[in-house]
Image (cartoon, rainbow, N blue to C red):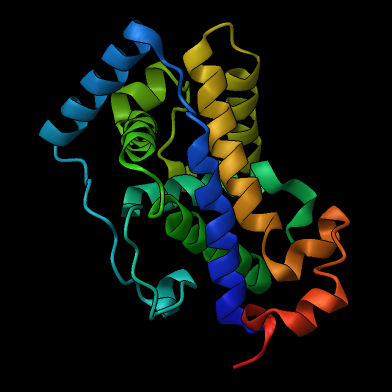
Length: 212
C-alpha cells in the first residue's frame, strides 16, 4: 500500500463521521457558537484555511494544501493530540512531531469532505476554542494553545467530557473522535489498536491496495 493511499483512506474514514451530527447544541448552544464565530471574525481571528505550510518549521508535508483548518486550528490540535492519543505517541521528539503533523493533515483532509452543516458546526467549535475570551471563560484554558501543556490539555478535555452541559460533552466527542480516527486509522498506527490490516485476499484483489 502506498503512503499516498494510506493518507487518502484515513481521510475517507474521518469523512464518514459526517453522518454524525457532532454538536447537538439546542437553541442556547447554537446562539453561543454563532455569537462566538461572529465575534472571532470581527476581532480579526483567522478563518482562512492555512494552505501550504513550511515543512521545515512545521513538519507538515510541504506539498499538502490545508482546505479547512486554519493556522489557529493547527495549533489547537498540536496541543490536544498528545492528550487525546496519549502513550500511543512516540516519545522520540522528531518522530513525535512528525506523527502529530501528519495526523493534523488527515484531520483536515477528512473535514474537507464533510457536508456543509458539520463543517459549520466544527468551525464554530474551533472558533470557540481559539477566541481568547471564550478559551478562558468557557474552556478554562488560560494560556494560548502553543503554550498549553499536555496536562492542561487533558484537564480541559476531562472537564468537557464530564460537564453537565451537552454542548461541551458533544464538543469533547467531536474533538476526540476526529483525532482518534485520523491517528489510529493510519497504516503505521494500526498495530496500536490491535488491527492487523486488510486480509491478504483484499490486498491482492482490490486495486487501491496495489502499489502504483
